[in-house]
Image (cartoon, rainbow, N blue to C red):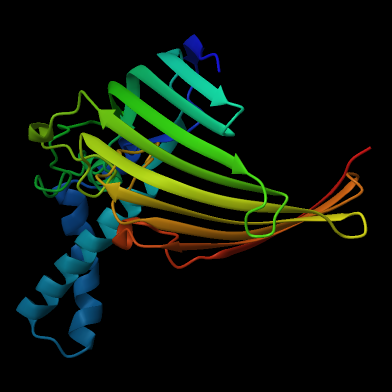
Length: 304
């Protein structure tokens, strides 16, 4: 029953995209001046008069329409881009100890990620991309500041992240009539540093928190040669994010979010395998965009 300890250092590039926005070019910005809007509104007065409106009402309606059209055209000229920050670094330590007598495995891992990117609120970024719009100075006003034509508005802020995972697995035989029964319990915790709520710039997470954590329970039973050379392994897994919301793009935990998995693996002569599983998502409120999108998965494998 000898413990194992590992020390890790990782230098990597982000595999998760972070979105930044880009303001419109000089031509698009020039079309948003007060003169351009007034000129467009003047051309719309006639159609409103023909609908029976009085002059003042027609002018007001024409102005409203001209502003909406101008803003729509400018928004179409603005854009966004996905960025993958490079040269991220992390250090960590792993620990494991196994007892062959009791069939128990204990594992733990702690990792510190330095200067990782956190996604800013997409709503704030999209609003900031309208900053050059000239006819209304209140449009595009955000804590991110003011921007001119062809400006890239970086969609993330950097900070640190520490995460801890602890798992306990027990393998027993003769329970539930199975040849092997695996029971596994895991707990994870994440702390995010470096983004101050007082900045006024929200992150892409509803009520994100510095600390967040959740737990998972897995039960799998293996029945060997149940029918001829066929082995069956039914399993069930339940995961719940208990407290806090991890900032994007990792979004490891979202308070109240749950995942329930029912699965069955059928193996024949160790050469053929079919796995079917049903995954049910729930909880987490509107921030959990897959809470009503359950999945049915089927996988077939041949080993040779």
